Amino acid sequence: MFTSLPQYLRDQNLQGDVRTLLLLKKSMERGLVNTLGDLYLVLKGLVTNSQKDIGPFTVAFYQYFCDVTIKRGESLEAAILRSETFQEWRKLQDYEEGEEPEIAEQIDDFINQIHLTTYDIKSVLKGEDILNNDDPNLKDLGDSDERLQNRLQQAADFSDIPLEELLERMKKVLEQQKKRHQGGNHWVGQGGTSPYGNNGAAQGGVRVGGSGGGKMARKVIGDKNFYPVDTKTTLTDDSIDVALTILKGIQEETVETELDIPNTIKEGVKQGGLFLPIERDKIDQKVQVVLLIDNGGYSMLPYVKTVKKLFSKMKRRFAHDLKTYYFHNTIYDGVYQDAFRSKLVPTEKLCKLNKNYAVFIIGDADMAPYELSEYSLYNWQEINKHFPRAIWLNPMQERFWYGSMTVNVLKQVFEMFPMSPEGIEKGVAHMNRKQKFGKAD
Image 1: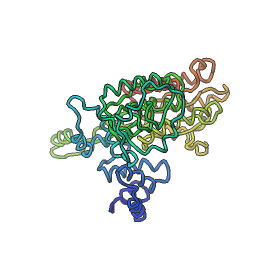
Image 2 (image 1 turned 90 degrees about the vertical axis):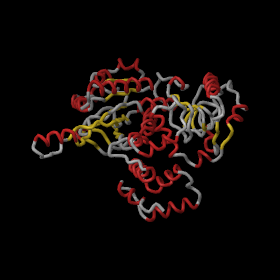
Image 3 (image 1 turned 135 degrees about the horizontal axis):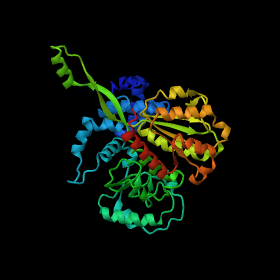
Image 4 (image 1 turned 90 degrees about the horizontal axis):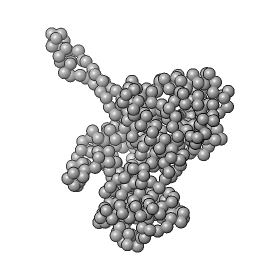
């Protein structure tokens, strides 16, 4: 059983041996593995020891079990798109003529089906019964329904409910909704059996932002206006999914070389049969992100956790393309690999990374004027010079920026945006314009 699996794991510098197979066999015998999603979770627990192992593990898992080969520096979505497995899967989907989803949504559905777990399909409730016993005009009293999350052992099927009826009910629910909800069956939220939301267990519902929970929604709404959050205020846990949806819009191009066969033949004929290989640039799409977080000042404490949560969600999708570093107030000799700021990465080394990285600097930029010394400012300028698509996200309310000398100085170096979903959206749009017209090459 899976006799060649250990070699695939070892190819990614992960633990893979007979012991791994024996533990996996025991897990299967105890009924812990019934779907491919179960297998992913169990194996991940057996062979990964830290967050940095998740990316390599995902590469090995998709290659062995799904025949999806992820090239070095390539995103999971790009690998899936060019795989024969995905193309065969598309042929089996029963899309109505003219209503085939965008290719990105199809890839999401493919990923969701791979990661479908026993939890998602343990028991199915009839959606009609849920709606018959539910009042869409129910007032949101602010009661927490998170306690339901751990008790949820069922899924719901809303496939027989007309889509127009679900959308109409969702509008009524949103009129009453005042806060974030999780784990229930009524509100637009996460992790429950409600027909509207994300990361839940509801088949045939309406997915609002986030990612699927293993079922196929009939409609996906990514518009931030469907979220009961203020997109202009500083990023919070309630607005993370809006920001994540926006971050997925980063457009990046990387260049690899490939053999230019026509020119190789053409020049070879000219040279009397001496065929010397001629290479050309091959443009490929992928996402590469550098995150620089100010995690030292008192004023940043309320925001660091939320920022790390947002980008950790992104990291799970682009595990091999996200690099996170830390600093306190400003940069002097470099940034740090760890949150305790003990492992220094000199600015010169940081600037040896590929120029195509999208750089997000998170900090209030407000400090004593003497801290932003000429040497420190030089370091920031070097980073900005090397990474054409670097932006600063500031959690401080924008109306206070003009009262800070250091904020105004750093605004001359980097394009600065509020650290809100709307600010992130504007920042990503700026990055994409730089990519298209500024050519980060």
